[in-house]
Length: 153
Length: 144
Ligand code: SF4
Image (cartoon, rainbow over all chains, first blue to last red; front, side, top):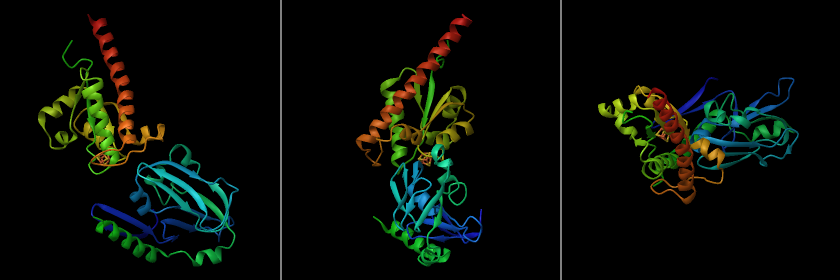
């Protein structure tokens, strides 16, 4: 488990690793573009997976699919809700996590590791990267979301 | 034949505040009160958690069907912790995966889909209960 930040609300603890970037919707983006693969790896944050409940199905756009930023990358259906997850970058899906087929619960069990959704080769990583949140920014965004939840009647 | 032969204890999780916890309990009521009252005994998870001696004893000597509302698997874990044997574990999530059209919503009152999912689960468990009863009956005959 990578080093990270965390927040606790009641009996829940939400982790935010510091080695990656985030979208406000709760998708993490781990850059591998400095490696020969030139890819990013994406998945659901700990907060998003805990808030959404046990995952029943996960459908990710297949490898080879070209996406613009914000186009739907994946649909994750949990026992509680259906999440439509936008792609954090424009690019081409390179690989989809094969574990999601038979054991989509891996998203709940290890959201920042084995529960990754896909790798994507970004078209313009430099530009898309500028629109993502750093770990501290995401933590504070998440804190506001948790606060809103707690204030709901 | 002892009075427990062919009977199973049914332990639903106590998920208050989650539709899947409500499905788990509804499925248990349907099984124990409507479908197979003669072969089942419903045990409240809270009695195990609170350490009720008679309930612990029942669970320890009777095969158990555990119904779990989520991956925390409170019912299965508590049966094992109480010295019981889970002969069949059922998860609401797995049932939903088989019946995607039946998405449970509502907590105090489940929606139609949630109630239907509970009935489907109860029917599947009834088949298991029947299989246990037949196996026990066959054992009884061979010992006669
Ligand atoms: S199994 Fe899940 S739904 Fe059921 S009591 Fe435990 S935490 Fe709640």
